[in-house]
Length: 352
Image (cartoon, rainbow, N blue to C red; front, side):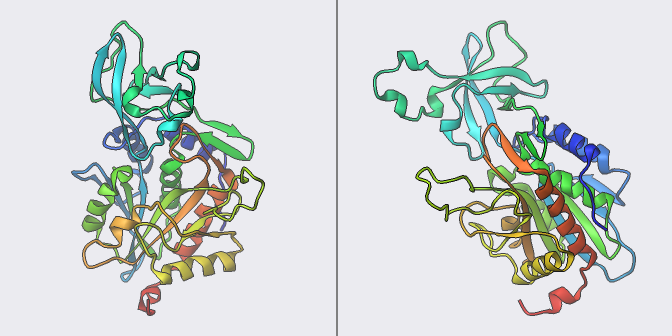
């Protein structure tokens, strides 16, 4: 059975991405997710870190306990000093390139108070200075005078509203609201041959912190991180072949082999790729390099957990606007669903 991404799933992703949930303040997304899945699962709780953990038990007695993790948090900012007259100093939360910031509109706090990241105009910059990156310490978030409901400690993020562009989606926080949306669909279509342990994690962008605690609590037999990975697939500036891409839009789900934090379990890599071949679901291997997913913390929890990662490729990660293909999202959902449906304990009996 092939699952479809239709208007209800797209509207739900819109709701997720338009919500502000910067690392350490994920409550707004957690509330949306809990309302969506509470009636679907057998157990649900929020742990001390803020992870939302849910269990959907299968049929039978010898099911594998399979942890699926998707992080709720996004990169953004924290206000650190009130400079007066509606100006606030801020720091970045998560990996954000300072070159991306000047002039960007932002939303602040749960009420999404509008602001803008201010920098001096190019007209008044000394000759040659405009080519240098302005450090974050020289930027300010400007909310204007009048004492709006903004204070030091508030989180902020890019004020980019969701937009469907026919076959593509443009939004902030596709990393990793795409994974959150996929995990919810898997709970709605949970295979009966496994016990599905869903972990909607926190603080991934600050070092996989929530996943470490979630994996220790759930103690699964096997785990998969579901994320969005950068698609570095644009043409080179000199028109030469791009041989440095890590994934490409339109290539299907990205199966991780190795990243900065994880050597994926080869049994899981084979299981996923063989499923794709059998079910005629396109996939690609995420090329080795930097970055990582919640798998980096999960696979070294307890006595070690066989772990892999599957991601939806997306352009412009950790900027004001990401972009993905709806078909890649759908194929990622179907690869995971098909793989889980054919999973048996024999997978882990094979040599690594």
